Image (cartoon, rainbow, N blue to C red):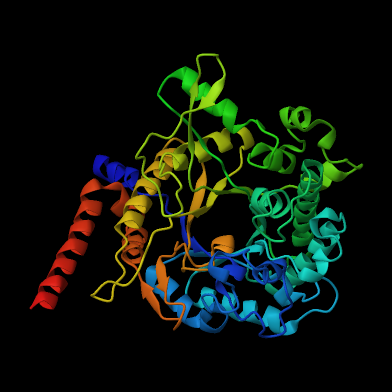
Length: 485
């Protein structure tokens, strides 16, 4: 009995979802195929200097044509869940009105193939590819975007809702609103005023609420609904009660006049009101509320998705205020120059659950590294193996303390188009040779497969991770010896 309890302590829950994620614009390609319309990202890719290296997503990972091959790789990996998004302009080329049956048929086939592989589909409705025609009608600055999104959602749910149980309305509203409409880095590349950016954000939250309503009305079976903001975890710099309180304060705060926080976006959705500190900070720039807005935005949801890549360490400063601890010189960084902070996957879910009380999915977590095929034709990515192991250990710690984390989706399943950074960054478990379309499962793919089949034990037992790394080294050494001969 004691041994069984000890074994269970070194595993994730039985029904835990082991997943990976992608987004339509980043992997599909097929930009001119099957009646797809243009999106704001097609517009930005055509702008000189907007995308690293002049890259575009016309072909990308070519998932539109290689979806069956990809699902076979996902099945071999052992995924129990696959999170992907639906391309709004592929389904409604003009954003509203005429439905493109071929576009919906693509996702119809994909869902069937996933289910045949015993992989549960987790569908994101909006992952940043707003139809270009809707941008020309005002885009997120136009309140009508909520109705447009509701129409799109209804089409998707009526077609796929007999097989899809879990829906995510919006992915990272902080990013597509802020990067797209405030600092201009992402599509549509605008530099709006703070007031206009906040208005776009409010309209995005209205769209979320309208999407929730459309899912509830159109689904032919019970459905679970949530959304997936950036988590922005704050990590106590020490074990002291003062630093813990400071981290909690800062994670829940709207501390600067920008989009980089959690609560301005999640409080209206889950708590039914904007946070008071944000309302005071933004002052006359706050969006104008109409009767019923907050009721629509807070239409009941079932879970909270959190996209977490890094966290910030926080301490109680000498002045008594919470402050960010500067990153030390030489601190570990990803290829994207993001700090490596595994305990973000403990503190992020823990503090988010304290505030919102919702079951949680880690809807994105991953690492960009500089990957390429080695002499043995394999892709060795030990940093990603280490990243995955460390982060899952911290996530398990949160679960063991009672945080209801229901699943983990690694970003990403495939190398893909990384928005304004083009193909410079590689996040995938599967390497993509963009010239040929060839797929090569990386070492991290095989390591994640071991984690999944062991219900997480392979990541939680130190000897298992060490033995796996030694196997990489032994295999690689054998190959190098043969090459030298």
